[in-house]
Image 1: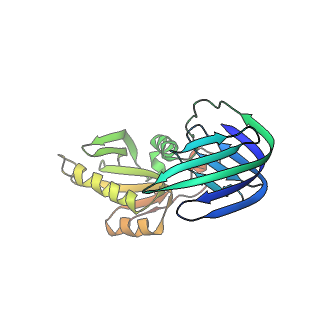
Image 2 (image 1 turned 90 degrees about the horizontal axis):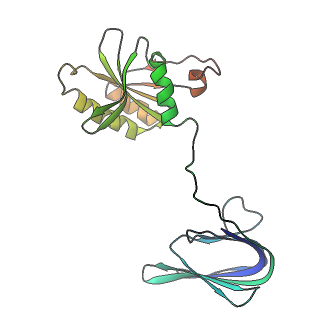
Length: 227
């Protein structure tokens, strides 16, 4: 990645024309072809940018002129950066980027709930994680205190799509011998209102769980809702 702090003028042409008058800005040239123009205000959003694939050309000796071009259908988007003065110009080899590791995503919830299925429903016991159907794995397959099968789908934020996914799993599971009465529970840190309504209309239960509670970091009552 190359980072240039420079006094420059930026001219954009393409689907429209725009000019950023001469001022001190940060120019970011990323190895994937991204090009971003930042000011010291305006938060995280750049004043102008080009996403890859781009062609970046350098003309003249420092202070140089940078031209960034990108095809946009039958036309071409173009940034012309006329650099008046370079205040800083550094390059960094950042290597291969590691994937973002988020705390509190579905996997964290699944692991915690697998160890504490009773947090989803009183008397539940885990039979198998990632229980396979012919259209994909159910997060947790459990039995309740009466021995009945319960399929649990886990989302960080459970939406209508999660209800549809659980419904599809149940359609397949209920065709299997001895599992016609299998019921479903949707579990999430948040279950949106529309998902609650749809779940209840289909006879599915839903429960909101708190990851901090599951980890023993705080206490909170959990309530299970069903149609």
